Length: 357
Ligand code: FAD
Image 1 (cartoon, rainbow, N blue to C red):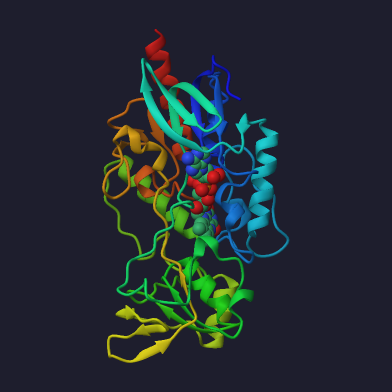
Image 2: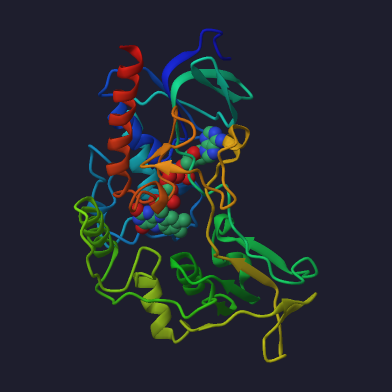
């Protein structure tokens, strides 16, 4: 139960990597803060990753501020490895996280923001929203989808291929989730990979490391007002992790362009032919989870908030960390969030010092 005098310098909403990294820098400022996280335990969205999920960079390139992710024996870190790392990170820095607390709304009160949850409310001079995207999966609309009697599942809720053995499955989406899930499901099911445009595969020797280096080069150039040329290939392109290479060797890594509409039992393709389908797995991405900000009137039609750096332009007490390129280059990745977490904490410290003076 919340105290009636529940006042803080800063409230951080979320308990994933973005929240932890911001907390790491905030705890060095001496400001008082509390973290409110909707999950039952540590790990943020990684708690919901599918069983076989592998990172696309080695452990040393998958760390947040201050303490490196422990190395893995072989290959790329697994989902459980990340959860274990974030769990130990919280303990190591004794981060003040309350769980499960789902923030429902934020209200402007005299000189502060009041953060509401079922359990009570918290008043803060500054609020950091770090709620990620996992709880807001995006599914594109296709005609007739309401008619389709088969199963529809977003990658957010995909666990493993067990549920699809012997079935006819459409895997929709051309990013890393689509490629990895297609690679796995195609071993158990009759799978068709559907992508709006031809998927972009990175060369076999390019992994997250290279992408992060490029993101850093872009960031530096931007800071210095330079324009630089870079090879094609971005954070959304498919990294050839071992299961995806294996799928290519099996000859199943081919995508077709989308169907026109659903029927009760499958889909109709642009040439008029029909395929029966038992299930569709939507690997079509996420949108920022900003429902708790709705009442502040800040969320745009694209589901974002106008920011300068990470600070909300129309609400000077609010910062947004970790959502994607719009909140900082590579900020929706483990290694990439450090830069914006650091600058956010510094900015908050500066602002609160000013208002106190
Ligand atoms: P989250 O981890 O989603 O944390 C947000 C937290 O806020 C959650 O605990 C959530 O419960 C909580 N929350 C949400 N709403 C509320 C609310 N209203 N009140 C209170 N709490 C709330 N990144 C890499 O660096 N390397 C990779 O290899 C990599 N692979 C990926 C593979 C997949 C399939 C996916 C989906 C992502 C991958 N990422 C990778 C991207 C990225 O690291 C994750 O998306 C990351 O989880 C984002 O962290 P976050 O802290 O911003 O959000």
